Length: 418
Ligand SMILES: Cc1ncc(COP(=O)(O)O)c(C=O)c1O
Image 1 (tube, helix red, strand yellow):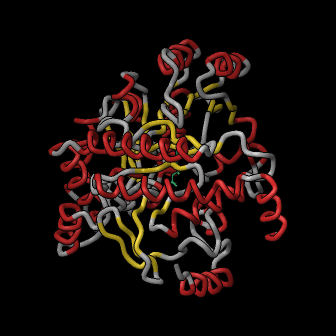
Image 2: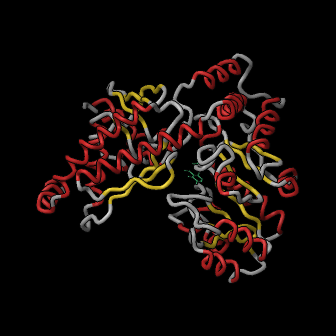
Image 3: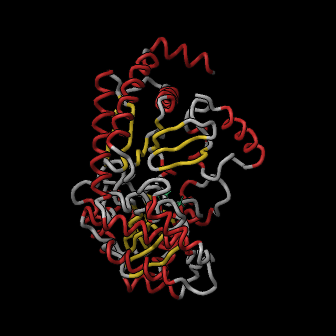
């Protein structure tokens, strides 16, 4: 496959855009540089075309926002219809109320809702609300919640005030004693515990219940970051699937099938604080995204979208795992079928990057786009034929990987590239 046009545009981007991309994890160095497309020209359903005219089945899907499929007719029609009526007004849009109402009907914790534009904004808003409601400042956190100062204080790579560092305390997923230690050592100062309620591995039985109980005991609120799990694990997110309801929850990626919308929602008495806080953006009521969200939620509710994601995701996992097993490659697809993760196990030291690059390149050359480690997202538009083709490509790619994984050859390859 040719990537000449992609590479040509990338060379211009490097001179004009720091890091070349607006999203760190979309930088081409994260994939297989030179053997993987960089720029998209268009996308339809589960397929994407790059600027060099190559076609792929896509499992990266914008890092998660595309859940029904690219250019999904019902959502695009809603966007087009709204476009004729205006994008954003000084007046409010009735869509703000309609989408808030729809969310309260499907998300267990949602009694009130505020809209912002990105995942980072809604997690930051949730932290501000929790701090205001409790009158406390420390946030106990597990996982990535965005790029704002509140969240990057824990791994400050520059530009974040040192003073914030002491206000963010970490704990480990599926490890209640680590949460207990974090809460006890900041007793009386913790405003909220925030975590993604499910990750590559499911929450251990009793873990989420334990998080809520510990937080309650310490007077802290619980925030679920459902930016990835929302509208994928279940219509109402992981909180519905696991039956544990937080005080606040944050949604973004799959809320509007790719349009930029995010929501923080939760208990009425907690959310009401947002009325007096500075949580305000010009584009919160932007109507194209709200129209897309209304249509997207309508599709989720009127078709078995979630069931489709689980069934096709399971077929993908089973097929890829069988392909790896047959080839004797130490590779596993695991986690949740609608958003599975991938791992090479037992790789010789130092081979991880080269093996991943080769795998991504082999799959891309066969028309399949994956991302290192996953998550492998599925849309309602992915068909059984897409999954079959992906599994076939995986079988061939695994055979190609046997060569890389042969230790003497791998060493030769590594040294020839350095
Ligand atoms: C779990 C989680 N929370 C928050 C965010 C931040 O969302 P955004 O990139 O829209 O600001 C992300 C982004 O990937 C995420 O995965």
